[in-house]
Length: 305
Ligand code: ATP
Ligand code: MN
Ligand code: MN
Image 1 (cartoon, rainbow, N blue to C red):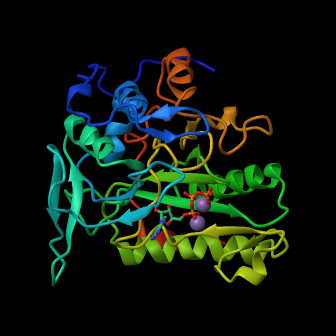
Image 2: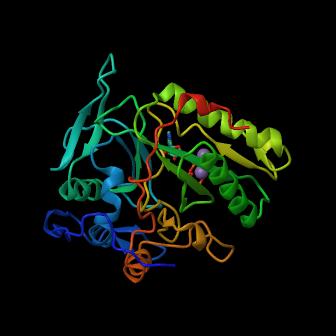
């Protein structure tokens, strides 16, 4: 694999550990990862994660007592949010609807201070709330599905996206599955993008009914992979590339090059402890060229069968 120069800005961020209260608080007690460790992790990966979390609505999985304590999934801005965490007013919201955003590294440190163990952005930026700039196809293996089948599913999603002129990128979810993302020039609206992704999921399920399902009905999922297209509707979220997960071992959702995808790299392979070394060794963004590869979703391309 060729090593290329990252296109993300290389400016190392300032660490603002001084603003953290309780830096020694254990967030992942099973691996001894602390709040300060989380801040250090995000300082290391800032240049990679920034394009996916700056200036877009964010939902946060907050765990004030760490991974083993109470979790809450928060979509709305709150009083007392730290410096750098900003309130976003959804232009389409009729009532309330003040959402959470960040503009810079200070904002990310504000999320750490607020015990954010997972960051879940929208697929649209605040420049255009109604036109997504990325698709995420979420592959959720049911009980008993081998990992190699999830990998096959990702390759099939890639083929179907490329068949309509889109570029496809893959990441480990940090949980149980894979996510395939396609950067979009924000032109089609949520309705068109959702319809397209629903069509893609349904086509996979009807072509290979023993392997895939497109609806979340639990009973049908045994031994099959849910092609979850519902990340692609207004207000829905998916975990950000490089976000940590509130799961044992402090795994992260790690972008891979397609040729890195294989049976030896499981969905929670990379962690807060190992991800920075991987990125440093790679010395390139594993999703090199993501934004440059964006294409508009053409309305005429909805037939994915
Ligand atoms: P896995 O690989 O284990 O499936 P995942 O991140 O894909 O990991 P899913 O359960 O498939 O997890 O995805 C659920 C999605 O719904 C997440 O991407 C997240 O953005 C969103 N979500 C998570 N928790 C909540 C919640 N409590 N309320 C609403 N939406 C949630
Ligand atoms: Mn999933
Ligand atoms: Mn899912």
